[in-house]
Image (cartoon, rainbow over all chains, first blue to last red; front, side, top):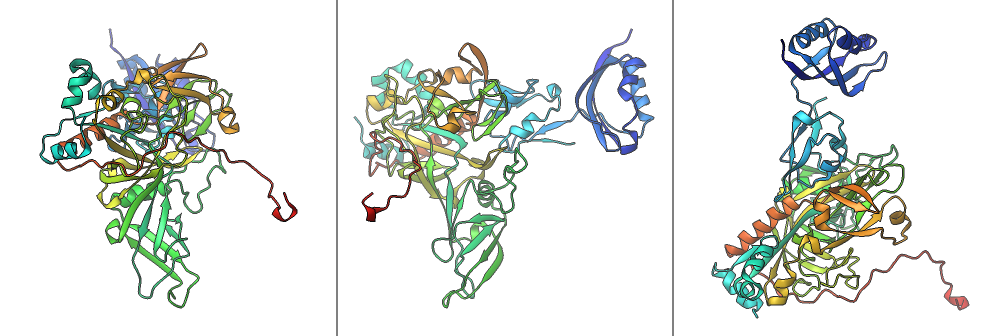
Length: 139
Length: 401
């Protein structure tokens, strides 16, 4: 009897770690359902993997230990795309380009744009389309 | 019937009844047109969106020795120097020196004229670099200095075209993403973008230009400015609904105001990937409730304003004039429209949220007696159309061509 959970992770690889089959082990050895949002894995280059893993909490803990055995920087602060509400003019251009509904019209009467970071899948479309550079990614 | 003078007297005595173009709709529904026209003095309209035809005249004052600038850059963005010695014009869409534009498509256009204007009003320190061919009276050949808006003699915004009365809804019929001034348009009509404040928008609340004209006082990014001319491409002679509301881009306003009085939140540099640079500008225009007809028109609703859906992959660039269909702003704000049987997601470039904020700010200023209305000195014309640019051969008059 264990709780299931979903954990968002951002993994950063130096050049020499990009050839290890990490996702394969997360699935096979730790029974996690892996959902990759964004990845840059090129042999001999620095890379990153933005993903979430779902499974029972014990397996996730063990998987985190497993990841710790690699020369990989793990960021599990659950902070990906950040939105600067001072810069946002609430024009609404991002809303139509956000595939996961993380950006949406929060209030119909005032047409205020709202952001739910939990739904963000790091596709970075909002960063590309925002005319006022209100969205940014830490990575 | 009320006059401008009567309304201004009520404003000065702090008794003016002011509502926004959003509030007035329900107010008139409840009270009736006749009673509301008696009670309400001013309806405030507003908009916030990218307005490319914007820029400013700056005067730097004279150096020791003097310089007659013939080429100049502010933060590496070229400014126009073909006026007096230390006067320049800085345009909102001007790219920075060395900007690769769309060489590596789509270009990012991160910083340009619009951003310099934003930074200037925000009080930032900017670099001026100027060159001169040198004259007897202006011998200095080169100048590099750092300044803020407070160091300038004048920083006056002069915008040849703002506040489009209605506009297109852009869609993309092709298989490739289109990058335009109407934002990013995904292929195969995946999304459609509009750019208007609809029922809050200045000229849509005065569709026949009964109160808004040359000389009308406006709220421009927090400063008290005015309409100095009809805007470029102003086309009062256009298709209209039975209610008199244009069904596509029609009238425009040329606005001016003192930048030293502006608020930086309402003047924002805008980057359009793959297209270029613009300036997000906030404008508020008060409509004096002179009579019932004026009030009736100021009660226009989103569902009564139609916008033309145009394909920006082919028809717009080729200038075919084709309109796919019309949709209402109510439908657009619902987030989805039907285009030839297909459901299309809708994006916006105009901020209704900021427009509401501006309409309320202007209403507050009028209520507290700080903003008086101005009677226009000349009307905006209703009978002009937009002429096209025709590629012609040069005519040889000597040979009787």
